[in-house]
Amino acid sequence: MAPRVGDRLPLDMTLMRLEKGAPVEIPLAPFFANKTVVLFTIPGAFTSLCRTSHFPSFAGATGDALRAAGASDIVCIASNDSFVVDCFRQTMGTGDSITVLADGDASWARAAGLAVNLGKFGGVRCARSSFVVTDGVIMKAYLEDGPAYSGISGGKHMLANW
Image 1: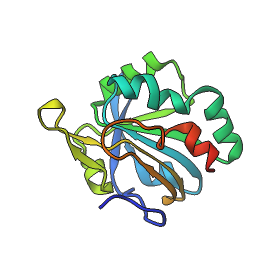
Image 2: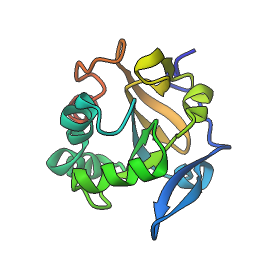
Image 3: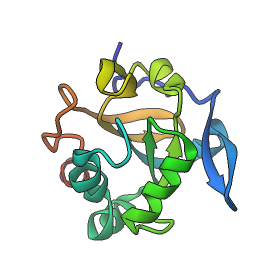
Image 4: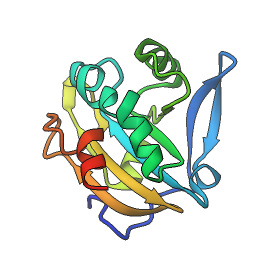
């Protein structure tokens, strides 16, 4: 079942990212503890909509405005391995303003109720979505209807509905 406002995210898991060129497990519980985090999920790094629309919608002035509104961090979870995710982060040129975490086997997506099976196109991936999360609890949820990007899970929509 898709996550809803009031649900607690599955934070008893780890995701991955590269640190100094090596994959490192990132425990989610301390990462989300005692703060408000903007979380958005993408089916895959370097896919056209993720690269040109969804990810950039949380960068720059919109990201700054989300932080000014109360977000401590902006986090993106992508259904790719940590090497692909790090290359994507570097290519997007956002520096450390958006933390990108890898859910390589989509285990977090499954636990969160966000797994979608794209079959031969890409296997099990994370659905396109965004959330305002306070201390691990979903305060606002924006889920796309299918893999397309309508903007409902984008940064500008989130900011307008903060």
